[in-house]
Image (cartoon, rainbow, N blue to C red; front, side, top):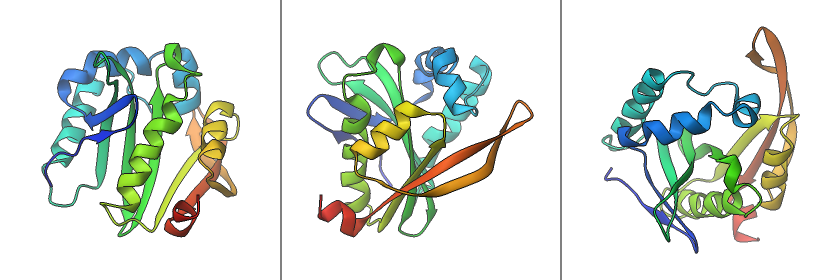
Length: 180
């Protein structure tokens, strides 16, 4: 598949490149981001490796992971990332991170809406899901704003620092998307 760029009113989502490593790592290591993610790279070397693998996915005819850098269109400033990971044919999982200095501006729902439009349209998804730790109030708020349905609690879903964390599982079907 050739690389895909998505647009919204204020944002451009373009495939990540290894050149995004510094911005991505600076974002990932912020305590307010890391405390709600638990799986972000903890070194610049790991970040570069992750982004090289993510960028190489775009060379596949059917990428399993589509990782985007989220940029402000007006000045091309990097403000976060969003990933669509294909679990099965027609079923994707979405995750997103917006830099804390840009929180509260509606960028996460705007970026996610652009990705949902592509997932349900161009990529033929019939379900997009997302999960977040039960303590991650910001992600819960975004998923609710997007009209995702909370389907349940995944008990002991993630192990972070030797401690088990619960996740909420949210999802939207193509029928939900069309009826928005």
